[in-house]
Length: 123
Image (cartoon, rainbow, N blue to C red; front, side, top):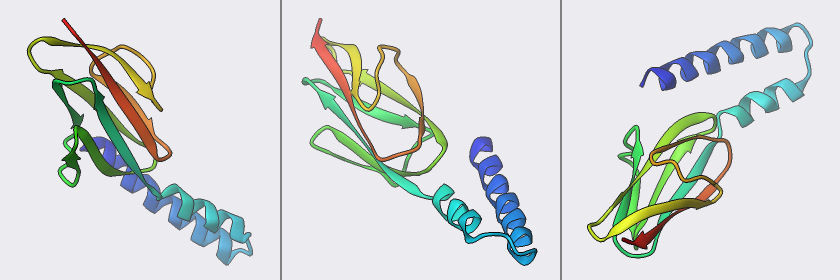
């Protein structure tokens, strides 16, 4: 929660700086940057194989799960942690798609729409 609060304060500070620059005759390119930096992205995280579920930390209560896929919206630049919880008889193997690695849970900074897979294999 503290990361999101800090991020929001930085956005406000950025807008104040942009307003001052525009008042002093600055360019519209700065305004475009401010609008782009507050963009939201869709993250889809899908379980590959049978027997598990993915959770996002901090909890993305606005997300939904359908066909073993967790989908949620997040602001650009926000750090999230994803964790796969395998069902009995399954084990985590690796992350795929737009996220690579075999650490569980794993941290990622969201700066684009992402499709992430959690690969499970039988024990």
